[in-house]
Amino acid sequence: MANDPLAAITDPHAHRVLHRLHAQADRESLSLALRFLDVAPRVLLGRALPWERLEGRLADRFICLDRTQGAFCYLLARALGARRIVEFGTSFGVSTIYLALAVRDNGGGSVVGTEMVPAKAARAREHLGEAGLAGLVEIREGDARETLRELDGPVDLFLNDGFPRAALDVLQLVAPRLRDGAVIVTDNVGLFPADYAGYLAWLRDPANGFLSAPLKMNEGTELSVRTRASAPPADGA
Ligand SMILES: C[S@@+](CC[C@H](N)C(=O)[O-])C[C@H]1O[C@@H](n2cnc3c(N)ncnc32)[C@H](O)[C@@H]1O
Image (cartoon, rainbow, N blue to C red; front, side):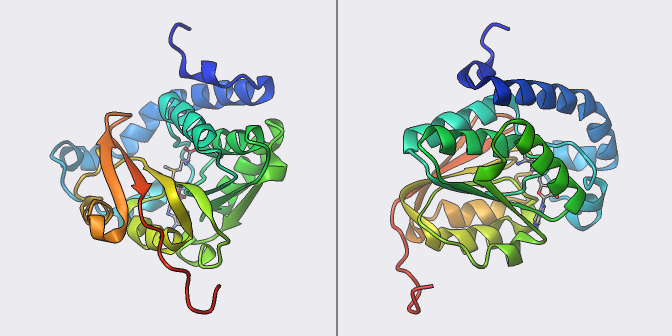
């Protein structure tokens, strides 16, 4: 396909798995949209959504970054020389494949993924195994607000792609572990502007140590750079 973002993925195993998984996600996109039909007017108007009701509807859904976002994350991680990456929201592991591949191609390291639905974490492990990347990834099952409390740094890249209700809490857990110049990619900020308003206000306030702007990728993707790493906690943890 001309201008295929997957052209950046030259590893044949990862390429084959990503090609198949994106095609599967494409096929499921209509049924995904149908599950949101009742809230479509609120989405179109940019209003806040009742995530406490919606999250359960997404528990078995194949949702993932699109190909452009995936290739962007891969290339960004390569440019950063990323060796340690954290991801909020692993789902079926599509984004995790891009991230783990970049870490491997940078010479090795690790990706910490997080997923609250055990069946999704199991599927993600299968897909990472097929892509030959399982050894680079630890998927922490459960609520990321708990599972990321213990986290080694320095972290080079953080993909924030969970649901919006926990986005700021998780960011604030990860932020002290980000090195200067580390990058955060946040999906869905343009699709759910009201739900991400508080998150973006925090991230775009230079007092919190980031420079941040929205990119026109997918429905709107925030790119943020750590400009001032926080001092480590007094106990050195
Ligand atoms: C948009 S999907 C992630 C897609 C994935 N990054 C990809 O591109 O392949 C969001 C995922 O975050 C998970 N999630 C949402 N809130 C969570 C939480 N508090 N802790 C852990 N996982 C969570 C959901 O179960 C869902 O699978």
